[in-house]
Structures are given as structure tokens and as C-alpha cells.
Length: 574
Image (cartoon, rainbow, N blue to C red; front, side):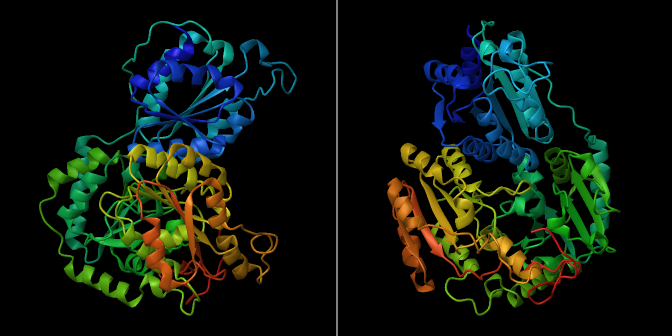
């Protein structure tokens, strides 16, 4: 059969239900085969970056590969930001790009380009993929498809790229078959090593007075959240989490102790500073979690660190007891070995008292208008029907991570490692289509403008995304940084920046919308947002330009000392 027919049928037999793309000449045969040969839903986006982020949202929600396609040249390069996002945040995805005919490729010629739009996307993508291949031999296609799907899901998940020339797409290949391939080999602990490590952990816990578990995004990418929740219940230890793990415990869980890090909940950072034992699961302990003072972060507390990536161990925070292991089998071994419940009631009560002393809604005293942290709590109360909150990058991201109240089955999706503005709108499309339930998107006025064209994708496909735009008329995160370090010179964040009426833009796209300025009007506005859960709706929420994302770690100081009550000694990245 024709190679593109093979690819289309292969994707269908792999269980792929949606493919995200922006049409271009070099993928027309692929799209035609998908249309003719399968029931796969082709979701046409309005930018390749949007297609990539939508595939990422689909992959994050399902734990199985999302698929995006793009044409050669600018189509392929436009995927790169989304590919990088999937790589840094460990999201299983398969990207397929079209390439010029083999006889139009420059090869070893000392020229920049031979074929129109010829671009070596494989070389560009290699640093941010688990593998990237140019398929120059049609006979290699079946094997490479098998390997792409196996590699995307195994070990630490991530993206794989297949770049397929047009004449290879038209070639005749054998009848379709899905081979059983060996998954990526991961240096992982044996059951005996896991048992021994658990024994060390449990012995240390007997001596600990103030233990904590730090859960990271690896729990989600490792498909280990249900087992993690069982372990927490059996151990009885409070849990703090990274930005990539906001949803590992519901907000009502008695062991939920909040967000750690640069913009973490103040009570969480205080709890970490007072702890004497820390079990780190699937978190790489990056600077946004620990601050610059890694020696102070380690202090004299005992730290056990489990991750599937050996290179993350004792990388920044030195002196940890480490085990290289995938989290799911490690947690399952723990469930067999945990016999006693930690006596943490006094410690949990202390953390709760600190939380009462430093509530998130009191971090912006004197703020005029809508308090963004209070808004996140109110949004949560109205959004029980949402399968996920998909959050862009900026101050609103921090307010959401600090203050959203998630149910046990709700997800929190954001761009962590890449930190890509423009992520939320297209990612929400993929997440919503995968879950077949409404999704809440939260974006700032700056980030929302990066992929605003995907509103048309929502309208055309009748996707019930509830769009919340936090409008402070600036690039707030960088403006806050400029206020701290540039004496209030706000070039390009306030000076030279502007935002339109998103309420009016939504109406131009045919999306019902409204806007809210005052706290007293929030409940009515949120009721309108959810008046009909089956349709998209945009709510523009106006927030004061000077609203800061607080608390914020005062860099150079201990993790418990946070702005605005402590001032930084060092300069940090934004």
C-alpha cells in the first residue's frame, strides 16, 4: 500500500483518535490518507505551534502519545517550541513532518538549500527530542513508527520526530503490521534495591519529627499518581509539591501542604525550612524549587531522592540518598512494605496553623480591585465540571498554582521547563478533546495574544473551553522583575505594550463573553462563564497593573524568607 495509507492505518491501530496539524504541501498526502482510510479526527489549527501544544495537551491528559503534523520549512520549525515543551516536561508525543523529495535534498553539497522549503529539521530537533529521524528509505518506515511510539512512552517520556520526504510518502510498502518492540532500556533499580531503599526510608522516618514528601511532575509522567496517593495515605506524611505536580493530591486532602518554591505558598516554604526529613519523588530540585542556596536547602535534613533520570541525582542539591528507578514499581514495592502510620498530627497541625497565619489571599494588602488569589478560589468553586485547568505562563500561573482548589479528578497543566507563553489556549484544545469534558483555560493578556488565532479552532470544532483572561495591561511577571531591579523602568512590559478588549475579540469570533472589574461582581460573572457547560465562553478579568505575584522567594536568603516582607540579596531569573 502507499506509505501514507500505511501511516494513517498504523496511527488508528495504535489507538490515535486525534491528529493536530496545519496544512502544507508536504503533508497533503498524509492528511488525504487520514481522511480516506481512518476515523481519526483531523484537528486543523491556525499555527503549527498551536498544533504542537494541542498534541501536548492530549498527551498530558491521556499518558499516551499525542500526534501533531506539519509541512517542511517554516511548518516544521514552528513546531520546535512545542517539541521542546514536551521534552522538558516529559510528555509522550510523536511529531511527523513532511520533507522535500529525496532528489531535492542538498545532501553534502556546499549550498544552503536545494528544494523549496528544504530545512534540516532533524538536526534542529535532536537536542529537544528523544529521537529524530529522516526516513529516507521507505522500508524503514514500519520499524521507525514502532520505535517512535515505544520510545515516546518508555523510560522518561518525551517527543519523537519523524521527517518523511514526499516521494517516500508516495512509495509502496508492505501490508500494515504493528510489531512488538523492546521499550527503551532504563537504568532502574531491582526489586531488591527498591526494598532496601524503602527500609532505609522507613527506618529514618521512625526518627523524624517533621517529615515531608515532595512530589514532582514525574509522578504524572510516570503514571503513578493513584499509587502515590495510596502511599501517602499509608505513611500519613504531609505532601508539598512542585509547579508540575499541583494536581497530585486534591486540595481537600488532609496531607496536602501546598506549593513549594520561588512563588510557593509561604506556609509551604516555612514547612520545608523546618522539616528534618524529605522524600523527593519525581522532582529534579531545580532553582525554582530550591532557590539559589542549595546548601541551605539541604541543611542538616535527610533527603531521599527517587527519579528515573540518573543525571538528576545529587545534581544541584548534594548529599541526598538516591535511587534511580521508575516511580510506579517503586511505589508498588512501598505499598507492600509500609506497615506503620507516621505520627504526624502535631506536625500537620503546626503547618495548618502557619497556613492560617499566612493565607494566600492576604499576600497583596491594599490591592485595589480584584484579588487574583481570591479569584482563583472563586473560579475553582464554580468549575467542578472542568476536567482540567490549563494555565499559561506569567503571574497568573503563580496565582493559579498557589490558590486553585482542585478536585481529586481534576488536572493542572502548565508549561514548566520551557515556560512558553501562548501554551494554554492550544493546549486546552487538546486537553478538552481528550477528556471529552469542559476545560478551564487561564491566561494573561500578554500570553493570550501569542496564539489567539486558535479561538477559531474552538469555534469551528465547538470545543467547550472556558477561557479566563487575567488582564493587567502589561507583561506582569517581567514588570515585577523590572520594578525590583531596574528602578521601575518598564520598557516593553508597560512602555510599548498594549492589549485589546478580549471581550470584543471573543464576540468577533462568535464566542459568548463578558468582563469583570469589581470583586462584588465575580460570582455573577463566574455563573455566566458556566451558564452552559457545553459551549466555549470567555471571561476577561481586570486586575490592577501593580498586582504582584507574592509571596516570592527573596533570592540569596533562606527559602522561608519571602517578598514582600524580605528583600532579595541576589538577582534571580524571572
